[in-house]
Structure formats: structure tokens, C-alpha cells
Image 1: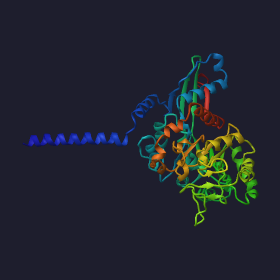
Image 2: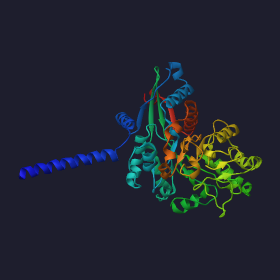
Image 3: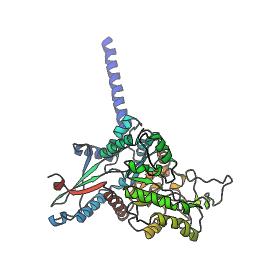
Image 4: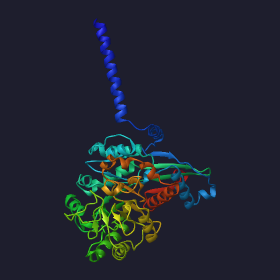
Length: 437
């Protein structure tokens, strides 16, 4: 009897162990089949320094003379990255203490993992991104609670340098006559303004090694871009323009890309979704669909005049963040962030090299009027700060397809993103033999 009981106990223990192993695999390590194969391939090809290594496809072979031409090499790499479907380079994901990439990636791509904001968060964040996005992401956006988690600029920069280095993606392109090596890093963004207040003032008083003008404190941080300055038109902004221009000029000179925001968003012509001013006089784009009813002539003479002034130095290191309000002067049917008409207007005005980014997709208006959901934005970069956005079904349906867009559009978007990274030193294209003789 005792041996029978013992056998039952062993059988039960075995069943429990099998159940726990199955549960752990399905919940902790569950990823779609295609992602699992991709993850294993990355693990097998990961370099000695921990960076991901990829072999890129190539549509045609290069001869020795073409290999020596830097522009030909860059063109071949851009073509290969496009064919490899590296559309995750469009994503800019929020990193925060309270909510982070774990929830976003789970909802958007079905990849589950946990990223608590502690030492483990700092250590595992790059590895998690590399596993979930084989070709990396466009960048990360440092949120306030993360920024305030460090006591000094030096400590923040050390975190950024370590994380970015571990998010390095390397790709190899075999052309027949030569081997081309590509190194790709993410941008590091943060919100910033030009009024010596907000984050500027808070961080200046928080960091022990902060000194000097609060507006330009960001030039001492290891960031590549800022969401700012805010240039929403209001009466009196003309007097602020010299300061705003100086802000953009100084940051751009330090190699920091600025995204003036939010394109046509202003208080005096702001209405709710029905086109009326609410009884409380307040309309918030975070909570509801907002309509901007600025007359076209006034929009051009006021809003665009300010933006023209801000971008007068060119778009090499300056872009535009487009908000989710409906800008009736250009497109009364869709939010500006989802409107092909709005982005066509911007490209006609500022040229094809202009880099654009959507405002965060958690806002109410982001999926309004678009069957493809928020990810159908024509913006080059897609900003996702708050993971709650992915709870909504309309954000999830067709998101991957919308992000990929058509082959031609994808190539144009990726070209702008990758060329901008190349200018900023975040993408290197070299002959492998030259770098590793």
C-alpha cells in the first residue's frame, strides 16, 4: 500500500512539474511561432559582444568598383533593409517607471515579458527590445519618472550609453565582391521646451551636477532628439520667437534633432468633435477628438509663419511632431496625424527630407477616422508612450500591415529614417574588411 501511495505521489508531483513547465513556457516565454524561430536564429548568430547580427538579402550583386563607392554601398544597404522589412525602425517606444515596453509589446506583437523599473529593468531593457524587434526600433523616449530616477546628469548618461550600446544591431551584406557591415543604434528622445520651466526647471533642481541655462541643460545629456519646442500659435508668440529660434539653433548645433510641435494646434480655434466650444470651455486632445477650425488664410499667415521661422535653418536636424487634432484648414475628415493631405502639405512646404513623428498614440483622436488604426499614420516615426492605447481593439487590428504600408512608401520612410541616423552617427555603413582587417 505504501509503495502504491508513493507511486501516486511521484505521479502527481510529475504532473504538477509538467504543468508548471508548460505554464511557464506559455505565459513567460510565449511568442508567436514565427517570432520563436526568429528569436532562436538571433540567439545563434549573436556576436561575442552581445549585439544582434543579421544577414541581409540583396537584390543584385555589386562588383569591386561599386563596393568602393560609399553612396552605392549606402543605397544597397537601404534597399536590403527595406527588403528585410525593418519597419520596426519606425517605432519610438516610451520607457517609464510606471508603465513600459512590456505591456506595449505584449499588446502589439504578442510577445510577453516583464520589465520592472529597477536594476533588472536597466539591465534587461536592451536585450528585450532586441529579442522582440530583430532590426531594432527607431528609438526610445525617456519619460519623466525615468529621468527623475537619476540623481545627476552623469548617472543618466551612463545609463543611456550602456543601454544604447546593448541595443546595437549589426547586419552583414554579402555583395559578391565585398562584405558590407552595417551598425544601427536607436535614437534617445525626451520631451523638452524652451521656456525655462517644466522638465527643464524640475531636472535642473533635481540633478546635483546641473548648472547654467535650464533650457540648454539637455545639451549635456546623451540624447539625440527632443519633442520640442512647442510652437502652438497664440497671441504673443511672435515675441517669443527669438528665444525659440535660439533654442532650435543651439540644440541642432549640438547634433540634437528638434521636433517642433504640434502643427496647427491652438486654443482660440479649438472645438470639440461636434465643432462647438464645450460649456466648461476646455477641450483636451488626450481625452477626446479635437477640431481646429482656424480659417486657411489665418492658418497660413500665423501658424505656418511661426513654423517657417523655426525651420528656416533647414531640416537636417529639425523635424515636426504632428498632433491628433482634426485640422480643418487642410483635411476636415481625419486627424492631422493620420491625414495623407497634411503630410503631403508638409513635404511640399519643407521638402522630402523632412523627418516627421506622430504624437503619442494613446490619445483619443489617434484612431479616429482611420480603418487601419493609429499605426496608419503617414508620419515617419510612430510614437507610443502609454501602453493603455493597445487595450483598444482598433489600435491592434491591422497595425502591422499599416506600419509596413506599401513597398514604395516603406522605402521612402525608411530612407528618411536611416539617412537621418546616418547623419547623426547612429548608422554606419563600412566595408567589413576595412573595419576588421
